[in-house]
Image (tube, rainbow, N blue to C red; front, side, top):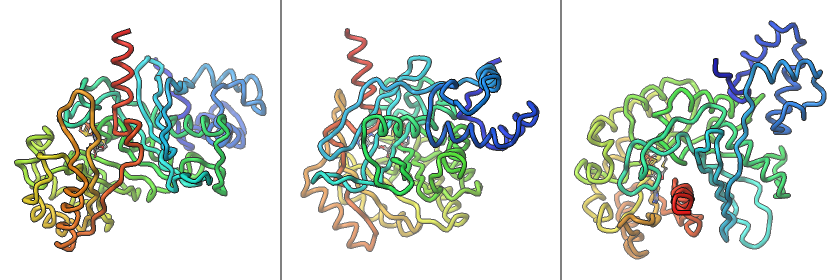
Length: 366
Ligand code: SAH
Ligand code: SF4
């Protein structure tokens, strides 16, 4: 039988296990403190647990940790991590400071962008993550450890957190490699652990799940009691444009996607975000404005415009700045709440999947 990883266990499961071992309840708290507060990576580091218990834990659970293969830091202190999993697969996380320490001051709030799959099966034409297909889903512990491993790196590298709780990661965006809602159960179980007061302690409202538009899973998420935020990778306001760049739209066309988003909105009463990458000559024409505004009004959604990040080997380009601004003003003229993102980390291949792609190609040609 394959051992479950200790970082995929909930408090209740651990309590039941410790009870069956006739271990006192406080041992569970000690264990969780080692994992989620001190973030150790070896059983032997858990020095206040009796040796016999550590042995029992080691026999029962796996304890894999992500291995840092490569890190890129950009001028605005966005950090990109390439991790190796225990089967040698590579995944990425990106740490984005809320207050870029441009002038040398410490920034205490950080957002971590995490991956949920190795590769992606959805094959959006503009995206590096889908270029080499889908390999596998991430396990619960592999999602959880992206946060812990980033914090281990922050501690080891002396990156000071001025946050009162000493944490580095305060916000999560599930916008790394992979389609999170295609790995639904592992995603939700990992987010429960990252949200739990005994685990990652990240508020549900500080966790944003981004999807390319899996309508049935959006409805399922709406029925989940936790108040995660939802972002839809729209990238086109008509089926014609979306069909050209996102194959998922053939399966769940805009009508179906919109209905699922309305259901989510009704259930949660929360504002959805529509992500819209601006790609020159593909979706940046002003004929998208009216349908986009209609959709945003219908869903009470705000629109995040993101200039496209160039991907090696792909022909797509971002529009020039005046065109980006023109698209934004046209939306605002329709009374849409919209922002134009000045992509942080543009200079370090921050868009999902790019560092992995580059590294795998380098390895292949070596
Ligand atoms: N699969 C999910 C989450 C991961 S992708 C989704 O598609 O929503 C996270 C975001 O990055 C998506 O909005 C995706 O469209 C966007 N993205 C992918 N490649 C990009 C690129 N080259 N430049 C800018 N954004 C990109
Ligand atoms: Fe997959 Fe999202 Fe990239 Fe599309 S944009 S290929 S769904 S990771």
